Length: 68
Image (cartoon, rainbow, N blue to C red; front, side, top):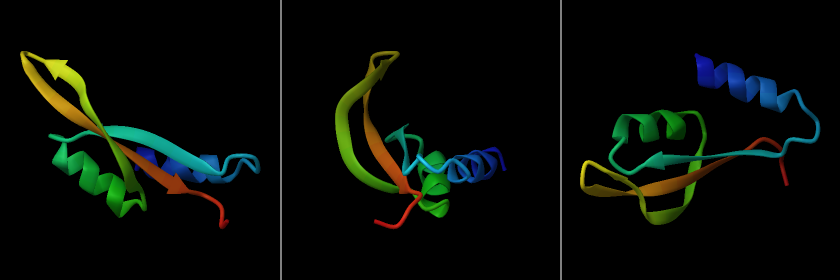
């Protein structure tokens, strides 16, 4: 619900054309949620996070708010 509200608010601003975010490659449920909301992945940042000795990749995602 929070993400839907944030997206709707961003859509109300005329000069905002897109929303970008990064999700960790091990956060599968979060990635599925973003995809369900219309986000698409556009790139991977290798080893963007290191936690407890484990490196994980960041998946860059984008949601276009305006038609190009």
